[in-house]
Length: 574
Ligand code: ADP
Image: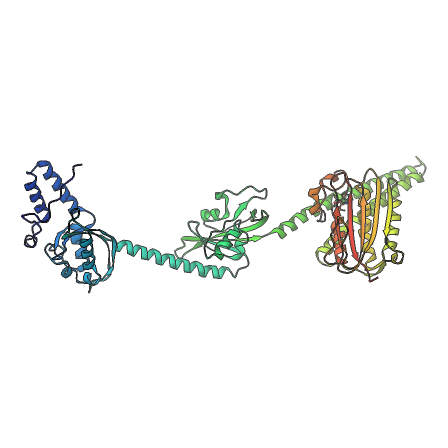
């Protein structure tokens, strides 16, 4: 594009001469005349100048050329005329030749004249200046201008002309103020809301209709997968949005559209579900009951969503126990009952044949039947009392009938009983007690202590199907001494002197992964297939030990490596 040479500003005839300006003749027209004269009136130049004039006139910003000496307006395009009229309330069509300090008297106060002079003197443009709140008496509202002052000088020549480019940003300013106000009130609203929901124990999250977070309480934050990052940001006075990771019980993430919040928005009605878990920051998955309900304004339009969640681990555990209970009760109770029924039928047939004279009474057969019925009745009895014990423990109704009980007496008696039940196992009692301590006593419920030891001994037999040695070791732990050396665990509850009993076998052992759950109700390790049991014994034994202010725990090097069960009970002062 060819460059358009600017007219020499003060050549003769001077188009910017104040008298000419006063005549009201268009300044652009005079520029063109000058150009024509100096350029021999080339047609191309004419077209170019006409275009430039049009561009200036129609430019979307106000453009004003001022004479810095007289402060008269030499050029004002359409936008400048409109802006003037809007700001002053006066018509904008008679600006040319007028003194700017008289047109807009308040500009003087704002230092505009000084700014014009600085720009003209230094020859450097002043950019992005602002004039805030130009209010005109008698008019509502205010005008906001942003303007640049550009001296129209040739290189290294002083100038009398400055161009002022003005943009009206009143609208932008009003919008910004409105947005700031809205943000401020939203923030205030969110803070108030947060203060209210903070008082609720349940986790609560409030979102707007676009799903953006409005407020959440501390309980909700405790479930977030980025909880620590949010807390750190808060401590620094910043803000980071918490995130909640919803997944199925198998660990799979829940898709956006499956989420209760989405469903509630979609349906426009409250949604409640207990089929999801929340994965916390430490990776632990908690089963939760989630409720999401749309929030409506007076016109019933949905304006947001409130979501609550509640940890239902305990509820799920009760459900699991109920299921386990039903399955154990139905399986374990049915088995001995079926055997008893079979034996009764056998007895009936035998007696019929005897009554009809078909066969004599066979006392040996009768004895076997009686034995079978008795052993199954014992089994039933044990099972029923285990179930009863479990519910007593659960409801806190376990009562102990304590009296001074001599430990070695109990152990001798029970080992004797167990010896008579097996030929494949050898029982060794290892007493590491000084002579004076052989009558080591505790304030215990003898029946319950027997129940614990009996359970440990019968487990040692049951889980050593190939037989082998079962060693029972007893030692005294004086006050303050821990258990040596590798089992350095001493229950916190026992501060005083204690008896430490270990029942060790060389049986099937306990898989590592089973260790944390071994003392839970109905828990059985994976390597017990084919061995009868309910998974209740160890749970009851441990609860009984705790009720005596003692403890019970297990050790095993793994499958096939045997097991050791440690029982610690407080003893009377010795
Ligand atoms: P049950 O023997 O009826 O299954 P318990 O509560 O007594 O129930 O034991 C729970 C689980 O602990 C058993 O199923 C078994 O997996 C494990 N366990 C207990 N004692 C032993 C042992 N001596 N050797 C190996 N595993 C054992």
